[in-house]
Length: 491
Image (cartoon, rainbow, N blue to C red; front, side):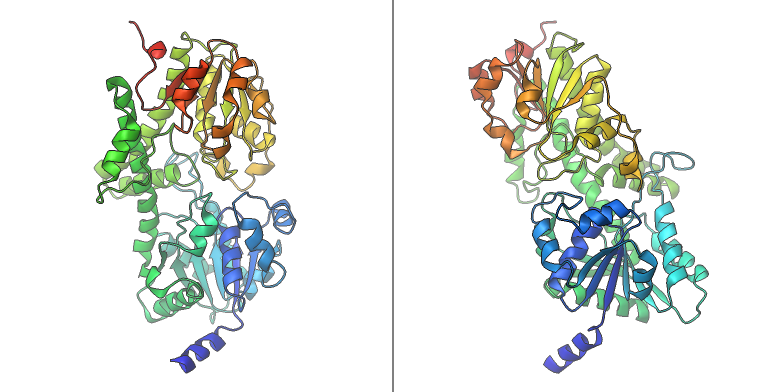
């Protein structure tokens, strides 16, 4: 066995990996592979020069706990970031494709179907610069049967008849905020391939890469279509749990029940478990909504309307929860927030990340502004330009590659603050949109004195000590918990 192991290691000694796309998935994933596989040369390529320059600098383009240490440990040794896509893709043995797959905004399937323009462009580029056979790995989240289409593009656009392409699906299951620990110690790694001799060899090659640090039993293999569908289904199930508990949060408020107690009671059932049962203002992030809409479109395309409707209700409930929160704020503040300053604590879609994609804060802020409110936003990790860009960009446009180059428009009713005190001073209300740990430690008695009265706190994440806040004098709305008498309608 040891001799066999040495033979396998020798056969892969000169392996080169390229990853197209230096975003939230490509950058961290390749950094971890480089760190754990010092015998493999890993290069991340992207046409965005500013992004690549950031990956090569001391200030990385994304915030993720632990990422700096991983990148700096491998960068310059066997981890590289480059804009020379054709050179590094042409030399690679394995090419990961981690490009944007946004929701279509026009044409057939608009609002649901995935736009594979960038994936197809990547495939054409791979084909045109390949002089040796390659394993092409789907890392982006794609619709079922995408591999079939990509195989056709690769085969028909490569002029060298000796070059063969094997497509694998290797979906990522990372959670932002814990991506590095997820990469170091994943629940599972899933690899899907063709059930042919060459397909099985390709799967074994990628499995070997991951087995540098992940136990073999956690590297699962499946056919291509199962792997592609597993990713969409996993995100749909997680989002479904959030929407399920959020639906119960609305019922709790009208009956005097406490959603936290309900969640704890059902979470202790081993069949259900406690994860993803925290009621909130809604889910966000780059994947949940996009993947469910994609799943719905696939179902509709094959005539499964009832299945599509079922999953679409998860997104509808998420929209309902955000709208319900806005309506609660407005109705509590005497049915108008016109010309009232409202402090927004948190803009990222969750703590420990600077990612704002599909964050509930966008829709909440827009809802308050439509009623004439003035939003003063503070987030410890999200930059001012990002907030203004998010607030002024049409839906789904955030997932376009050139999104960060679009103009960031200043908005009359949006103020981005550098400290929580600036956001809260003279505000009529505080809305907690992100569960940053720091928000629990603020000097709320001092902040109370700086606010207009009555001073409201609307906790969309249930992270604050509501009883203490009421003792200070705040009118508190805690999502999914018995309503403060002040907030109960008398009609």
